[in-house]
Image 1 (cartoon, rainbow, N blue to C red):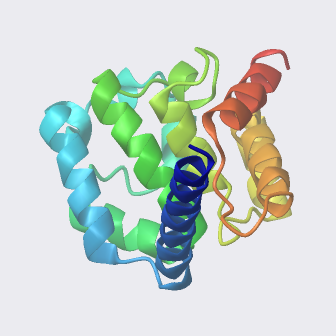
Image 2 (cartoon, rainbow, N blue to C red):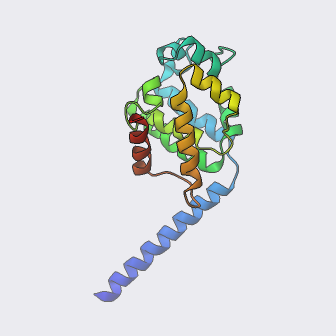
Image 3 (cartoon, rainbow, N blue to C red):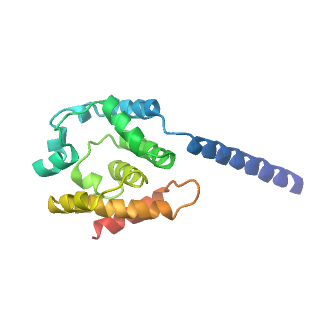
Length: 191
């Protein structure tokens, strides 16, 4: 009986090592704009109103907040969004965002300022924000921080600070687990 157990443990160990190798290989490569586009298209399939012009208003953002976050007041399209995200995400942030987008598809709820900023707990949209804000390529200048605070987007800056610190403190995979996100979100809700 002992040999069978040892063999099963060895098989499991090799499977885990193979999964870890595959994940590390995936994280080494650049973020694919096409891969991002495909994932976003799946979300829009589930939430078709996402790209509608009135979506920004439905999200609970004020006119000033919308103008800071989207100066051209453009509706946007998946190509532009995929290009933008590809320029800001590193492989770690993309892995985290892909998981968050899966959660969004499962929850089937549209974004709102409260769900984005963690006021409704650890929602898929909050995870989306944390994934994007955790990318080392996402940085805010002093004037951007002042503007964001002035128009009521201080929560976003708090999330950015937490996401950046959390990213620096993680190991090689860089990906947060659900428990870490829940702890972060609870901290944001209590601020």
